[in-house]
Length: 368
Image (cartoon, rainbow, N blue to C red):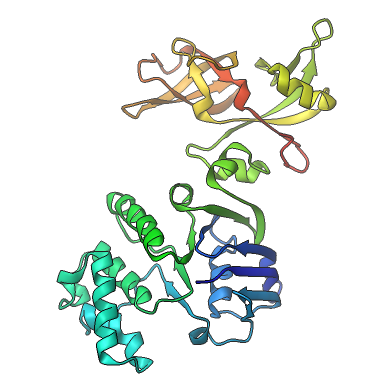
């Protein structure tokens, strides 16, 4: 297997810069996920690595080998696309064996590789079928099998679950994670779905407008986003953001987040870190799961009271999403399912200030 390196890689089409000075190291046997909205450059980054697009500037390495001018077929990678691109007139066996036959691999070796891949993917009983007789999940596994038989250094997966229904996506996510561990290969996976990214990745690379915003383990991105974009993109429902001012109470020297319609005290340890920003405008961020009903406050949190008005709510079974208003701004709270939330009525909430986030309003970079 092999590591992958992008070194100051840029891709332009005329005046459009799809990938802008990307520098990224992907470890051998790592499961790396590229995530971001449509047009952020994630699929282009994958296609540059595969050799399906030419690099405008920079260097890409697979292992220690620079592959800028290496044809796709010689890069020792395998790619699985959103459209599975199976040959409809061929059986599952022939679809999986096709690439090996082109390389003139001996028939006995082809049979062995296809059988092993089919066993791994649980499709041994489907080898005589044609794609039209398969479900979407089965076709997806055949496409993976076609990649596995080649035993590549790097697997590239470009939104391979997009055509599956919600239940099958969850099941296939788990199967892909197990497959990665079993093969011990380097996986690079592209998705716009941050839930897929969080559940599957060893590390996530978040892109926006062709620029790498942050790369780290899923929980680090969740707990310590580098900027407003990453904070808002990672996590579902998205983080709440408020324009506010960091103010100090003259007699007590306590720090507060003043949002106009609310005033939230900072914990002492965070106040010490942030005191240098007192008097400044800030963007205050708090995740919906860190806003609780005042009736059902978890133990051992730094709880600051927040009064709001219920706009509407969504009962999710194990929790309620309350869409509330403060100062005319809507935000979301994930609260205990026993919470009484009546549209148009006031609701008493508390904010876990230990998990707050603060950003520079100009650069949108995180203060903490």
